[in-house]
Image 1: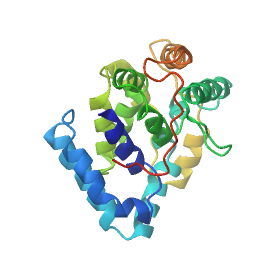
Image 2 (image 1 turned 180 degrees about the vertical axis):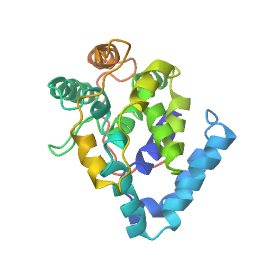
Image 3 (image 1 turned 180 degrees about the horizontal axis):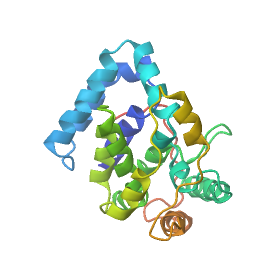
Image 4 (image 1 turned 135 degrees about the horizontal axis):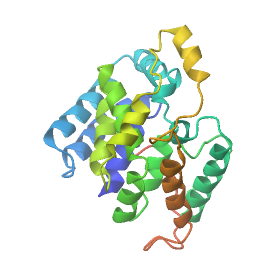
Length: 244
């Protein structure tokens, strides 16, 4: 089921903790039993799990911060890659949060709905087909993140390769290419990082218009306000950490 693998991928993308390290064996077992992932992908994910589990926790946390908190092009917030700092981002956040709440996932005030680990937790409580379909909407973002992490020889690449593999459709090459044309500063290059954070919102397509990609995701979000089959009336609790 997508439920278990979504929870594992979500856990691998949150700030490393001792609890995550201690769950390594459980996560490995889920990954190794996932038939939709290739043997190479399962091996890459188990390598990442082992890397996090066996690292000094402070080293693992520092690496995470350098990758995902200090590097805009590796942001774990979906709408950063679609809207940047545009006004559309706020409405997209509202729409996504309403989709969560209609399906029983209620956020605290400090949680942003487009945080990828949170999005994956939501998918974990959706019907299989619906989860795979929703996963397909930002699949080009996952593909671009995988490419950027591959350039850095980061084991975190495996998480995004897995998300692409689990998606209902493959990423469109032009959308991935457009993302990869955006600045991708190294986390140790402070001047380049400052410049990257000052850039304009990401745009897509030949005309530089991001509305096509953006609207596809928002359309799916708004359509999701209608109760999905098998979910209507359900109020699943949001787990603190993924479990089998």
